[in-house]
Image 1 (cartoon, rainbow, N blue to C red):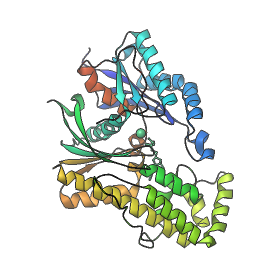
Image 2 (cartoon, protein in one colour):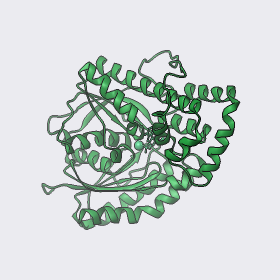
Image 3 (cartoon, protein in one colour):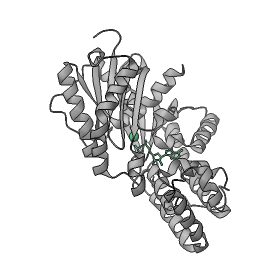
Image 4 (tube, rainbow, N blue to C red):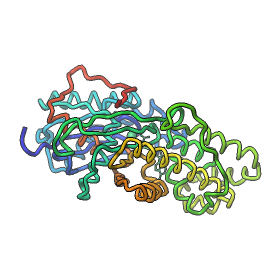
Length: 374
Ligand code: KG4
Ligand code: ZN
């Protein structure tokens, strides 16, 4: 292999078709993301059949654009890294089939990547780009619309961080909804559009986060497991107990129908009690994520905390993590917004150490809807 290993990453596990080229696991040469949000919006969530069809339509132009922007031809890449799971099976299959065909046609190695490992690598990639290197062992919180899971991350071998494989231990996970899913469902109940996270994030600043007390979920067993279905139900009961909020919900629904989806357009249609509800919901979710993650970090003597996935874009989550981690003397790392949500640069970065280790996927590589990292 040449000393400059440029890997083409392909990601299609959920609702973004993405391709990227990353050099030596640390320099992003290009990253192209075709989002399907507009396709799924009117259903208030990802529709698997529509997602596969969109991936099929977008994958070829997206890969071509990633190569073009990197100034490369297909033959210039050292390998192809593709997400093989976990995710929606029909969506994954599009990327896996295309990645296999391309690798075979070009005579290049194919590396299978676990999407969750991609999220871990997104944080490392970002940190290296900013000239900071997270010290391991770390605890990584992956928090998105599909996942809420905590891992212990350590080196499996010596070497530069971007070039070594990691060993993972699962410390906890959600027992029901993912945190992003709770955001999306609460946004749906309140007619705040889809996806719900960014709008709730923006509106929360205008509400009183201490107005409504949502209790901590009562759970037996592993203290690092999460649960978000209780708070979602609590919001539903709150709305049932406050029918006076119904007219504004209808007004926002009408606004959404006219394409008014921005927080700035929805805020004037939201009363103070609604803004308080949204802010209190967010505060409860954020404190839960932060306290469990930092608890796990202390218990595991982690040197850093890595936070990744779509919900990692949340401003209050970032601020609270920074404040609380600082107090405990633990360094905390987030990806940029572009690398927080699903992308293929993180997949190319995750493929690099596996390529170096000769972990090539066989021609029989299959997509796997369920694929635990540990
Ligand atoms: O990682 P991602 O793009 O896709 C999945 O793998 O799920 O995450 C999307 C999720 C959605 O649930 C969305 O509401 C949430 O991330 N999200 C946010 C924010 N931005 C996106 N949640 C809270 N605050 C945000 N700013
Ligand atoms: Zn993801």
